[in-house]
Image 1 (cartoon, rainbow, N blue to C red):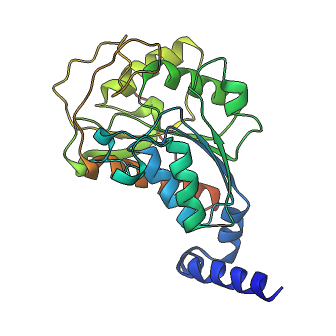
Image 2: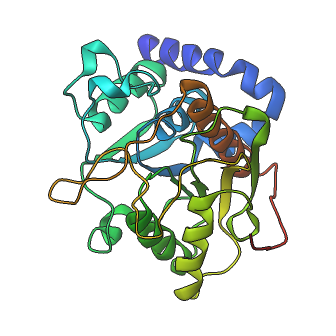
Length: 264
């Protein structure tokens, strides 16, 4: 019992600065929250890092990929020691070292219409979409929307270099992001409206996106090759931390985000 008490004491001490800022009630909400993060790459890895350090009680991690050398420039889970390891395994090990009391579930699968029941059941308190491909992103956001699961989604972070252009808002109110524009078109055709939170950049990019492109740096096994886009560790990390910050405040009951839908 003494060891158990010491563990609890250490656990509470590590979250003392969060409790001082947000308060005991808000922190209790975080400890009781379950979050699903889909995509553990450059953005999603930082989301998981911040949520674990903030005391979120449960994380379901979804990704089919393994760490490669090309990930090291921008992905927090990518180290020389983790090359070849499943990203979900690397994340679970890291979370256990940060917050041992966090309940972690890992799903090594590709997000698709066929896997949506597994990804979204049981329904989390919050879904964070950090997928970098258009088709599965559309399918995930559609499935979450019809299930009324609160969702925050990352738009395109590649090719950007100006952090001052990063914004938060409703997906249907974004402007300046080609990925968001194509995604909105697809979602509207499926009857999806306002209500999905998005982190995006208004920075103009030179890349000529095609609506049929999958906007990704790697291909799903058996799928067609996709464009490899340059990216900075700073911008992708800011995207991830911005999503995580928004998630923390929402889960703690301290923020409501709203925007008026516009088109670009």
